[in-house]
Image (cartoon, rainbow, N blue to C red; front, top):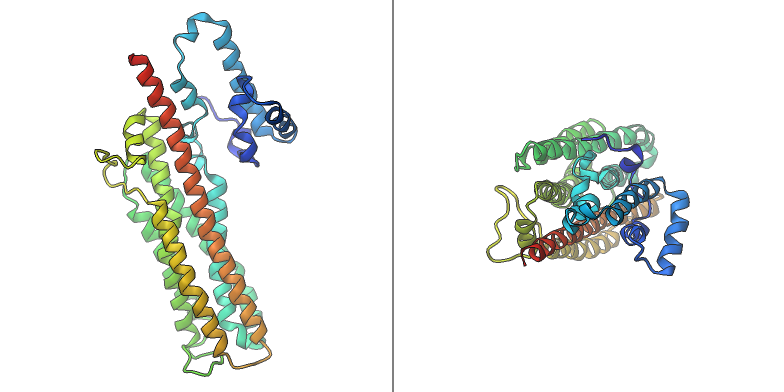
Length: 338
C-alpha cells in the first residue's frame, strides 16, 4: 500500500467545508458551494491534495470508457469514505483523540485545585508544581489507552478490556500519587462535617473514570471496529447493525453504544451536578478563597461537560459517516444485481 501523504494525515481543519469535496470534483457543487470551497482550498493543504487525487480519478473515469463500467459508486465510496481512513493513525481520528485526552486530563487538574482552594495560601504553590505532571500523566495514559485499543482492533481482537483497565489503572496510580500531596484532613470549610481532601479527591476520581470509559473508549472502539469491517467490504452487515435491524449481528465481542443512551447519561449527570453544586455553595463558610473555590467548581464542570459533549458529537458524526458509506455501497451493489 502506498505511503499516505503527510498532508492527508493532518486532516482538514474545517470539516464543514471539506464535505463539498466530492461534489466539487464531479462538478456538481452549486455556485455558492464552489466559491466557498475554492476559498477554503487556498489555506487547506489537505483538501488541495484530496482534490488533486480525486480529480485525477474523475478525469480518467470520464475519458477511459473501459473503466467507466469497471468502477462503481462503491469503489468511490471506499476511496473517500470513512473506511479509507482505516490505515491512518487512530483510524484517522487523531484530532479527536488528542482533544478528548487533553480535556480528560484537565478534569484531574481542576479537581486538585478545587480540593486545595480553601487552603490556597498553604497548598497553592505545590499544586502548581504537580499540576503539569498530573496533566501529562493522564494525557499520556489516555493516548496510550486509545493506542492499545487501536492495536487490538487491527489484530482482530474485539475486546476493549485491556484499554479500559489501562485507563482505570492510571486513575488509581494518580490517586495514590496525589495522596502524597493532599492531607488526610478536610481543607474546605463548610457548615457540616467535611470529607478529608484525600477522600474528596477520590470521590471526584470515581465520578470521572466510568464516564471516561463510556464516552472515551467505547465509542472509539466501536467506530474503529466498524471501519475495519467496512475496509474488509462487509458493508451490508454493518448497515444492518447501524440501522438496528432485528437480524443484525454485531461482530463478536462488539457492543453498539446508543447515542440516545449517551445523551441520557449526560442529562442525568447535569441533573445530579447542578443541584449538588448549589447545595455545596449554600453550606460554604465564607473565607478569602470562597470565590476562588466557587469559580473553580464552575470551570471544572464546564470542561467536564465539554469533554462529554465533544465525545458525543464526534461519535454521532462518525456514525453518520459509516451509514453514508454503507448506503452508497449497498445501493450500488443492489443496482448491479438488477
